[in-house]
Image (cartoon, rainbow, N blue to C red; front, side):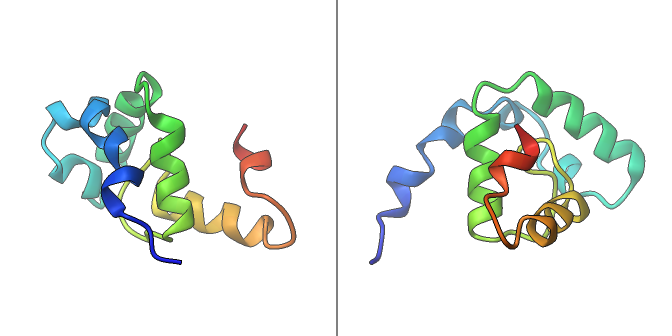
Length: 88
């Protein structure tokens, strides 16, 4: 079943990261990751962002407070269950 992408991404307009340079969330450095994750911690739509990145799956950037490496780990560990239980 195809979904209207706009209904599933409305949360993006309320994301705290919208006020920051997007390059910060897609940089490769550990310092940038720490800064991006700090911004994510105070984001009102962090859960929706992480769900989007996990369900797509998106394998680049910091989404919902997790790096690509962290999301891949959760996908591997949760392959038999629900990844949401691991990050709650």
